[in-house]
Length: 606
Image 1: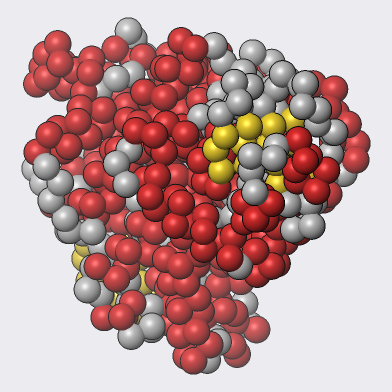
Image 2: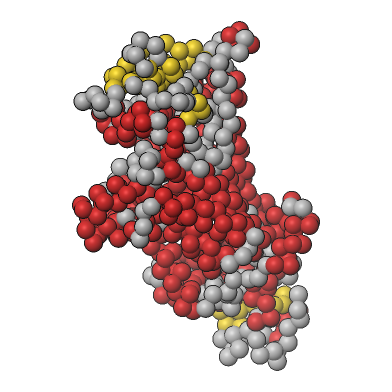
């Protein structure tokens, strides 16, 4: 420690040099405050302050202000922290908030009476050489991770966009724009914010998608990161609205919310880190809560995973093997899902090593999900959100030294000015507040009308969203098979690229790509076609042999001339037995009936 002198004009913090707990935290505070405070053990300086009894030094730290005023215990702690950047809030609470000072002094007294135990606890929770955490490397990596996620999302949609929302696609964007303009009037610019109000042509759709890809690469390489993040947020938000039913997925909202917080992170590191932790906490807790609150018996009796690996939208090849596990093993895995989603998130806001435990648990769950199910970039994003649970010191121990050196060459600390700090603070308060409102509503509560109004007012921006997948477990796998015919007698089946169809087709991997039509077909099988206007339009495009739409499929059984008739059949799919799988058969299917009746372009039904 730096020696102190009675003539030193700086404040003094005097502590018990023989106390391991005191030495541990004084060393930490000294790194926070730098040379703005002088530190010294009372064993060396007590004689300079005869007015302070030795027992007072032994029982509590003493803070000597430059004007000679003396404070001790909790007040001395908060006075010391007030000399550290961003820590003055504790002293303000101590002096202004009723009851805070009394509780603080009681807590200090209890800890002081059990210092050896709390010293051991400090070593356990923070480590032996605990230093003030820095997140510059974490931020540097996270921004590049978000860039990769944006890149996969934009490119994935770009190769499908014309078939989904192009002028000859299933849900043409120009028609959607015209309908919104007619029904919403001038309010459309706030309720449906997107760049496609300027132009909704096929060219503009492609420009938005590929511009998003270029901006993502700029972000990955650290070129104009803030501008790139802002434009990526605007463009992807535009695609969410323009994509209609094909972009109405939680992971799209999840990405645009994380992308917005990445923009905050690029401006102010510490607030960005805490907001990202808040996002991960909300996402995990809400994902677990919806399963319990849904009242679904399969989650309640821990049998949900006995069905999940069969009935999930796009299983991977490994899902077949996991589905063969004993019921007891799958019940245990269900319990672990609840543990990771409902218990571990609490540790996100706990001391350093407990955050690490939360991160490793969440990472393990997401890896297991990725191995058994194709959820595009969803699980990757959740894994990347675990980065803010670590700090630079932890990452430097595991990352390649060459990468750390590259970061050291390019990193610079974010120290926003007062105006920016104020703006970030306002945004943070809004996000945290609306996050609480979302959680209360998800748990069945009724927030005050004013809180709901505030939440709804920012809802179009998608910076605070509600999450929770598989609240109700489907127990059977229904699949829609589309067939075409020229005479109404001989029918040929259309096959999809990723969803089950041919019983001999092995499940495929498609992470981080999302085949959005394949996904919609899974949801369609759970609904009546009368509730899905897009499905009839899809069949119409098949009858027209629209190349943009047909290209979304694996094969076209009518390559030269479109069929006269199409229909959709409804099948029940189950996994094939081990013997059948050895013979190349992955699925068994049983016809349940018609999903959509026979139609033609000239028929009145379509």
